[in-house]
Length: 234
View 1 (tube, rainbow, N blue to C red):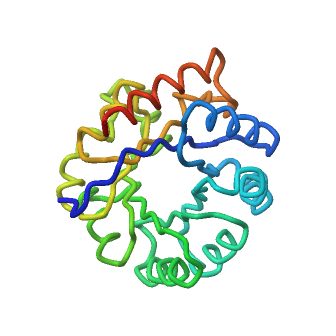
View 2: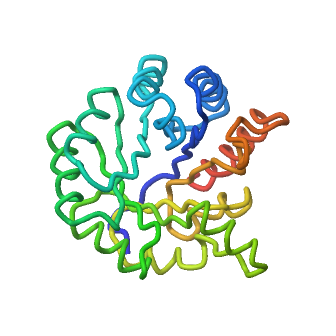
């Protein structure tokens, strides 16, 4: 079990493909009460360090997670993102243990948090535990985009991060984040499972097919979600 309770944190995943839209969405999200910004993998692929640097320059007091999904070259990738303004970086549980150790070392050297992602682990609980054992300060329990869509297309039940979330939380002592196809209601439930880091992304706030900001009054919806999640700590 987690050793110390963490207040619920709301993170928005900016899975967008240009800086301008990412900045506009981030500004709106922060007005609505979001705590952390995530430079999503699509944004990092499209804009690289420039996207992370722009977020940091526009919102200097806000934690920024760089969703690198690092598999190799761990120290350099983490160092580059830290110097661009990232407060957290992401390494995969499937990476070699030396890569995970390198990211953890860079995190210590440059003052950034290391989040370990158990995506595609054969044993998701063991994958989460491995990440903690190698020094990651956070665990992301993650059911992937392609995995969810592929299984659903075959007419089978789509896996959900909540399926094993309690087991993952019980297996580690670091804060846990659940990612992958959650509904709004399920995202709000995450702190009740012991996972205080709540991520809002596709399809909740980003169109999952176009990777553009979702239509509708997103700011009002986000404010209601943030109020609900933050209220869990009151």
